[in-house]
Amino acid sequence: MTTTHARRLVALLALVSIANAAWASRDRPALSHAAPRIILLHSGELGNRRIYLTDVYENLDFMYAIRSAIDTVPPDYREGPYVEISMYWHNPTWEATATDTARLHALRPEEGQPSRLYLARPGFHAFVEYPGYLMPRLVQPQGLRLLQRYGVPTDVSPEKSGSSVPG
Image (cartoon, rainbow, N blue to C red):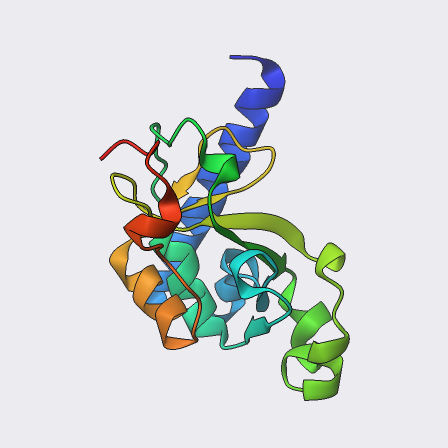
């Protein structure tokens, strides 16, 4: 493991620890570090549609739902169906935006932390990839239910996924 990888791993472990503690206690000050204030889902399978998650407790639940790293992903996963995610951290910075529809619609995805949700396919669960981190994150069932509640696709039918996906 290189020094860069070790630093990223330590940062990720610290974030997961803060998220776990904040989720368990629902401590508002810890929330500003454990979950993004706004999660914007866009592009990919959503096309031009944008979905905004602005409830900080739901965002914390989502972050808790992606706490587990996975080590096996489809070999062609980058060619599979996905939804882009932009996460807007540092809650005080985004508080006014989270509560103002006009500001939400003016958000630029590149202002947030880029991530990508890869939809579940036969033989593989849905997962989130953070560019720069070592391992993609499995989306636990509670995270899938949260996304589905807002109309975010979380899986793909077998006929759309192609026949090259292991089953």
